[in-house]
Length: 214
Ligand SMILES: [Zn+2]
Ligand SMILES: [Zn+2]
Image: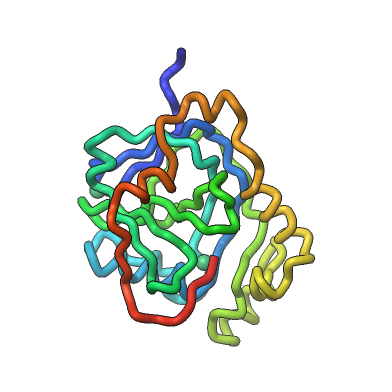
């Protein structure tokens, strides 16, 4: 059997998550305030984790790709993972590497356990698969002057909010992609998934704050 070729790696290289399915399921840029907040929390842990300048300046969103939630993670990497939400009422769960504060991957109830999302602005992604950017989402979360520029210049659809535009073709495609069942052979290759790893650790909360977004 060939060695797995797709993996996520933290910035210092100590934490690695093998992706049993290398295929990118969807690709967006997310402008939501929670993605930004998670990026800022990561940045506070290491000078190497600063938000890219274009993200900091609202010139683009956080780059997010989605993969099947079928993983191989060895014991030492599992020990480095910490699981958190921004608040106790938060929806998104984040897996962070405690070695260097890299945002390794995320889970959202919308994914129904079949998908993880990954911020390529934080985590190093190695895969032979690629998918062009499909959409920019949550433009409603950024100051209007920057939002107007993105709406005017973007080559892909710009969505104000995923919740407010469920009938938009790109959001329908996003939901279809992130709820695609994991194939039998990929599932058989996996030794764990996001939820299994999360269940083995305490869940932490970054803030006492009211809401969260995909
Ligand atoms: Zn690390
Ligand atoms: Zn977001």
